[in-house]
Amino acid sequence: MDLSNIGLYINKEIARKNLDEMIRHAKNHQCYIMVNMEEPDTTQDVLDLYYEMAEKYDNVGITLQAHLFRSIEDVYKLLQFPGRSLGKRCF
Image 1 (tube, one colour):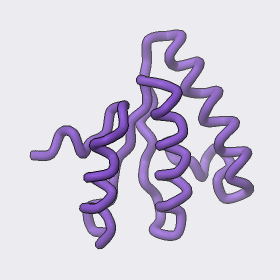
Image 2 (cartoon, one colour):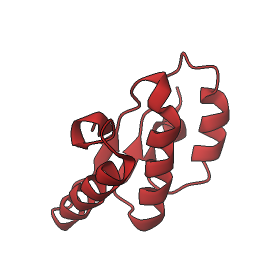
Image 3 (cartoon, one colour):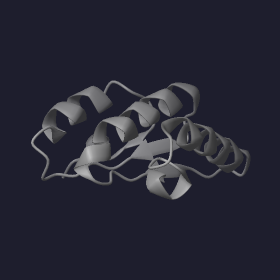
Image 4 (tube, helix red, strand yellow):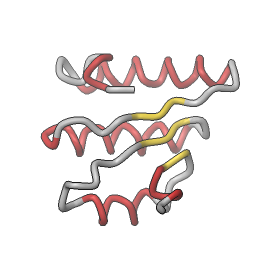
């Protein structure tokens, strides 16, 4: 799920509301939502929204962009959160 498609570039609160609703509906149907990391300028907003949703739901995960210098630190932090983080499936 690209958060820019559900309002991140307009307003973080719009994206939060839409993401929460999508994850809740997915959970009702035993599905999960994988949040995609997008552009480097949205990385922190995407992570912030993921952390918030991962605290509420167990059917949400996130991908990371391996080429960002900060990604290794993000992996360590993501390992502390529930959800379907690709950091938990490194190969």
